[in-house]
Image 1 (cartoon, helix red, strand yellow):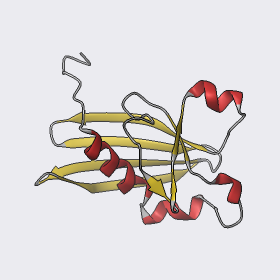
Image 2 (image 1 turned 180 degrees about the vertical axis):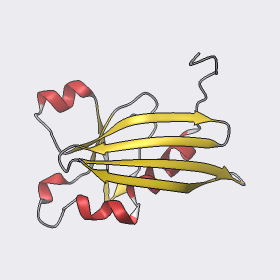
Image 3 (image 1 turned 135 degrees about the vertical axis):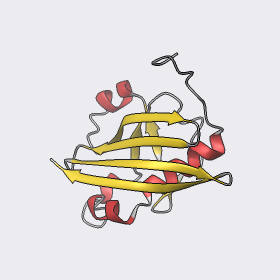
Length: 129
């Protein structure tokens, strides 16, 4: 229970759909710098609850499956070029997702809405620190 509301779980296919929509946001692409920093491939995402390698198996970015790593793995391998989930709030047909890409000093805030069983980005906000 979170704030008196039951935490909802998403089916894996919807979870993958949301993460793919977020990673493919046009405004976010300029920050990945895979052309000048090819070592940033595959794209890495820090595990966060349901966002894990089992549930997101098969999600690709730049033609390569993304890596979802545990906090311990990131620390052990000294990986700093990963996306961090700062917030994941899912209620009814809306979902708020916040992704931080600390190596670039950016945060992306997404509001998703499920319409006719498909997730759509309702709004985004992107800022640099």
